[in-house]
Image 1 (spheres, helix red, strand yellow):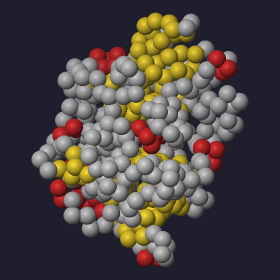
Image 2 (image 1 turned 135 degrees about the horizontal axis):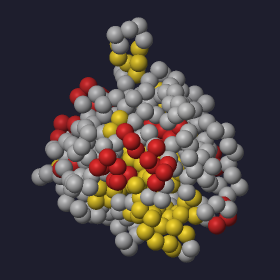
Image 3 (image 1 turned 90 degrees about the horizontal axis):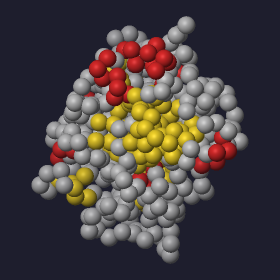
Image 4 (image 1 turned 120 degrees about the vertical axis):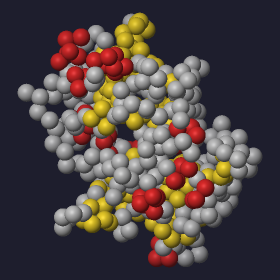
Length: 229
Length: 208
């Protein structure tokens, strides 16, 4: 399957100012897939620590992290709906106050000593994954006057090969900042809803955490390598 | 599912989940050890060491923006075959080697004193008759969708001249894909490979 440029953002999107000096200006060169593109790294349970999927626990120093506990789960599949099994998902996010633990984050919202904000897991045999975390806060950024990022969680996935590699962001339903955010709006209009998780009462854990579903569709693996002989 | 669309035929396909920028704050999640966060990294700049028994090489470079300024918040991933031209995946059914060469490396460009990336690896062999090369994925703040390129090697002149992918690129831009053997460090070759996002030296990026 080819990259579907009708859903992915273009490189140059001037409302998102950092794109102007950082994106390729020449046409991409077509590349027929070879072994180089239809293979990719395979990670297994050996890279997953006990609490890597639980961001409410993996950063604890002396107490519970602050904020609204949530469950984020979903299915990773290809365009035909076939589950992508045992694939690595990595996530990172701001804390409940909208502050990243990253050393260069200058936002003056408070860090949370008990929240690290990164985790990872593998999908199971049905392509399903589940994280526990804290709902990330919105935060200001320097793109334009009074710019704020909607609440979001960064997701990184490998899928079956390097052609299916994806880094994206999961958003929350009904966020009033969507219409002002050039990163979200860089996605063609018909595909923006694919980045918004759904609140699900049936995923919500009584007395513990609200449930959000975020399904992810990666490019499938049906290319045949070319013959060079 | 809200991402189903009707194709012209009877088959229903799901839309791919759109890409978003990695942003400036990926390091504690994706390259935590390199940036000295208290979390393990699944990959870093060291793909191989002396125990591999194969000749080690270093690939080092910087990423430049349209004003030729080095970019300090890019994430560079590489994926390559081993010295025999085999990719270490289920596809080739190669068990994890005792020295754990996976063929995958990952580095942020902002953790070192000199902005850039340095991979210590082995030189890949030829796979499927292609010239030896390393596949590269580039992510950064300002890049809403990642970019793919390849690193070829300046001392593989004969193989490069026959490579089907290199030959698909207009001749005057091919050099942007070829790393230059510039020096040796601790007895092994160092290849320099800079990535230019824009400008006269703009790197060739592929529609993978």
